[in-house]
Each structure stands twice: as C-alpha cells, then as structure tokens.
Image (tube, rainbow, N blue to C red):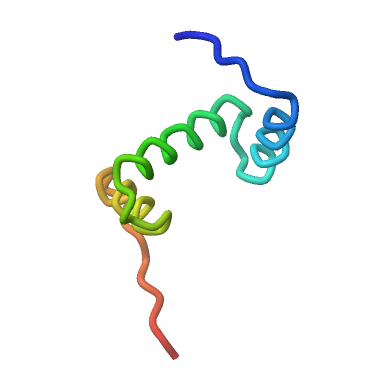
Length: 68
C-alpha cells in the first residue's frame, strides 16, 4: 500500500462524493481509480456497461425493470 498525493480540489470532491455514495474517502478514490482504469482499457464501453460487467462478474443479481 502506498500514499498518493492529490490536489486539494480533488480531495474536496472525493470528500463530498464519498458522503453521497456512503463510502469512505479512500474507498471513493479506489472506486474512481478502478473505473478509470477499466474505462481506459475499454474505451468503447460506457460507464453503465462497465458497471454492468463488474456487477455481473461479482455475481450480483440485478432486478429487471419492466416497461409499463
């Protein structure tokens, strides 16, 4: 494990978003890093597609929403 230096503005955005997402500041930073790495490695996928694949690989059963 190492230390990553980030700017004050980014740290503030991490702090605010972590409270909305119910994550620690470190967990929010790790999430953004992981999604960013996946997005760079898979530039044709949208955020939703990346998240769908990640949830599926974790065997999360997502409920289907039926159209009215």
